[in-house]
Structures are given as C-alpha cells and as structure tokens.
Image (tube, rainbow, N blue to C red; front, side, top):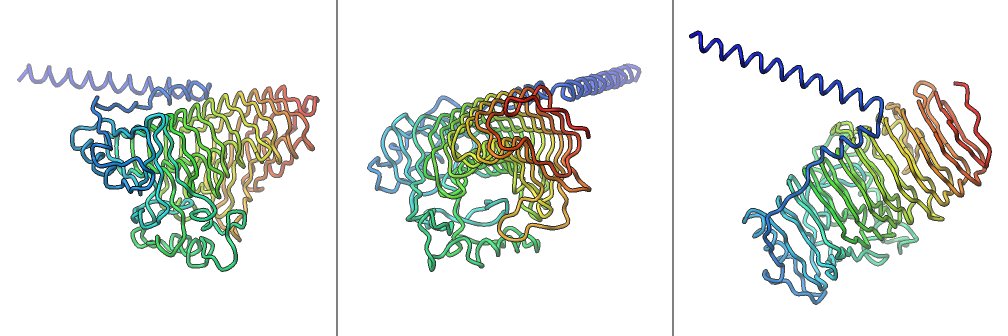
Length: 479
C-alpha cells in the first residue's frame, strides 16, 4: 500500500515537473518569437519533418509503361504506385523517355522520381481526369482530378530533374479561361459562362455540401496541376513543371511540405506558381518561377467557403527563390477568408517587366480575413510596374466584391530591400476607417525611379527607418 502511494506520488511529481518544463519552454519560445521573428522562422523550419522512403525501386516500365509519347501509361503508373505502397513504400521510377498519361494519384510512402531526361506528358482529354474532391479558386467542389493528386496521404514526394508537362496551350485547357489572349472567341464555352464559376460560388454561399457541388464535364473549370489535399510530410524537389492548365503547385489543408529547387515555366491564364491554401509549415526554397500569373500566392479560401473551413494558412516560408516573370512576386489573397499569418520571405530576386508588385496583400469586405505578421528581408528587385508593397482591402474582380466582413491587415515588415525601378508608388496601402492597415515598417529600403513615395488611406503606424526613395531619405510620418 505504502509502496503504491510512493509510486503514485513520484508520478505526480514527474508530471508536475514535466508540465512546468513544458510551460517554461513554451514561454521561452514565445519570448524568442515575439522579439525575433526570424528566429521564429528558424524554429518552424526545424520542426518540419523530412520524408523518408525504403530503398526499393518500382520501375514503371516493369508495369507496362511505354516511352513513345503516345501510348497511354495511366494504368502502368497506377500499378507501379499500388505495388510500391503495398510493399511498404519506396521509389516509383520514371526512366528517361516521354510517357503519356492521364491523372496520377499518389499514395502514402511513395516517391515519384523522374530521371533527368524523363518527361511525363499529361493527356489533353478531360475524360482522363476522374471527378475528385478538389478546390477551384478557393472553393471546394467535385471536379476534374488535378494532373497529379494525393488526398489524405502521409510521407509522399515528387523528385528528380525530369519534366512534368501539362501540354496546356491556347487550343485546349487555356481556351476555357475565356481570355482572348488564350484563343477564346465569342461562342466558345468557358468558365465564365453563368452555369460555371457563378454557380459554384453561389452553391458555396448557400452552404450546399461539397459532395453535391458536382462539376467536371460541360463546366469548363480547369484542373490544378499538382495538388496535395489534406496530406502531411510532403516533398517536391528539383522537377521542372511546364504548361499547366491552371494553378501549378497547390497544397491544400496540407501540413509540413517542402518545395525545393523546383522550376516552374508556364504562362497560361491563372498560372500561379505555388498556392498554399489552408496549409501550415510550408517551406518554398531555391525555386524559379516564370509564370503567367502570381509567382507565389498564399490562399485561405473564398468567402463563405473559407469561413466554413476556417483553417488559416500559417508558417509559410519563402527562401532563395527567383521570380523571372509573373504579376506578383509573393502575394497573399485574394482567396483569403480564413486568414493568413506568419509569412517569411527572404533572399529572393524579382526582375521582370511584367512584375506589377513585389509584395502584395489583396482582400475586401466580401473576403474578410485577418492577415498579420508578414516579414520580408533581403530582396533584389529589378522593375515593378505599380508598386513595391501593396496592401489593399478593396480588391475588386468578377463584379461586386463588397460585404459585411471587414478584413484586418497588420504587422508588415520590409527590411534590406533594393529596387532599381519602383513604378508608381513605393507603398500603396488602403484600409477602412474602422479597420486601418496597421504597423507597416520599411527599414534599410532603397527604391529608385518611383513616381510617388506612397499612397496611404486609413493607415495607422507606418515607419520608415533609414529608407531612401529616389535618393532622398524618407521622413518619419506622424501617426
């Protein structure tokens, strides 16, 4: 009896000690994070688990694949992936050569690896992409499968220096955008027809269950290229991705993903390079983006659907990337209703005559959302058309974008930034009187050849520290 009491007492003491230690560590981490956001970034990186695979190889040629660029290899990919996962995981090898296929669905513990001269050509037949649970412009639905898709998987990767070719152009997927620059003419069906995009948005506003939002054939909503849906511990490394139908890299509701050394070259409509959505612990590093839309666009759901899901995107890190072409370098929004926080961008190069903004946050009173704690440092920017930093609560596209969900934007910091041609404004920030844009800091920023220093409406606490615009030091604004 006494022995049992002593053991019980020891357990209580151990639990108490452990609890105190946890709270002590948590307090210490909080203090470090609050005082040094870049230390917080380092802790996030260290917390991201690495993918690991058994040393086993499953060559798609052993499962019937033919590298002639015309024989369908959909079944061969499916068989190789199934064999890999059923045998404990490993590497599904795509040898040198050109392989035509429909949708590829990855499984847990599978590393899809492309040899240097391997190229996967994705079918242009929409029937080769079965209906799955996915998302389109921030709204969940049942639609064409992404070209590469994984749902509810753990420990999964796409690696190697081969090429993933969506084959999209103005005669197939891109024409669905309804853009005249992409082959569309009056009379050709597109996503802009009333029964397509508008119906999906309306369904979400009315709370129609996702399983009943069935699109696909006849609705012209293009599939994403690579989508990890509700996955954990993911790696995409070294591959080249070209000619995407729509968004290119789309982790949604996915935690712990590393995108490293990827080259994106795709100039179609809505060809964002990487769109993390409802995701956390996302590391994007050493990548090159040459895109038809934003290079990186952080998302968090659209309007009612974003508020239904209510998962903010957070702990998003961008390091050592090159933005060759694209509308925005690193953008947050506009599908942003669940909010975004803890974004870190460092050591990037942005230089394109088509770059409108280097850093941009876009939302409105229909989207809402809280966007906070965005830290940027060590950027080399060539030319921007509009502004270096744009923070906009009145983003308007696709008709009326006003509602009752006033957004919040706060705690935005730019440090050690050099811009050769600054465009119209160095900073363009617009908030609401009842919700001003708060706490903007520019420190050690040099911007050349800009028309106006700033355009500010309803901004609270903006600080210019050792910042020079058009060779003149910017005076501190009284707030």
